[in-house]
Length: 242
Image 1 (cartoon, rainbow, N blue to C red):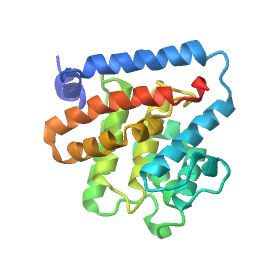
Image 2: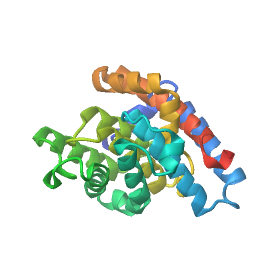
Image 3: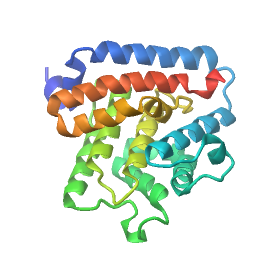
């Protein structure tokens, strides 16, 4: 009887188009992982997914490096930051489940190392940002009946729009999104490439993030519908497809 008032994401699951969109994309991801992945995945496939995601996230952050340059270790500074983050990201999944604030701080420290003073690594840039991160941590710790994909979408948009850290907020937001999918069992081997889905839909990605920030409930609704499309595109970008 109290679910609607205690579940912080319950209202999102009642919005038009959201339940069906997220059920469909989860079915598609499950089919991909079951039919083409479970019996023949490898650490190399996970590494390739992470590399593709690091490149896409870096481009969204302003990098001009190609995937081939990133693969060869000759990408620009933003790409190097993104690759460094991706190489250690999956080890943070248990921390995200237990202590989201700690995990988010570590994500920023990995991404921003060498770009900001050491004392700014993993630390919110002001009291309002600290409050925003605490609220996001509480949301991640709260029981919810919302699909994990929807949780990931909200985590991503909240970090990207609030920009709580001194730098690299986009990289942090997209890394946190991927980590939610791993930690909540959607994609434990991290074979879907959500960052590539956002890059493929870049114009919609950027406009819907602005809508999330400035558009009230309507903007949030538009973002979560967009994110379902991006996750489908991210599944298409999986190395399981070759």
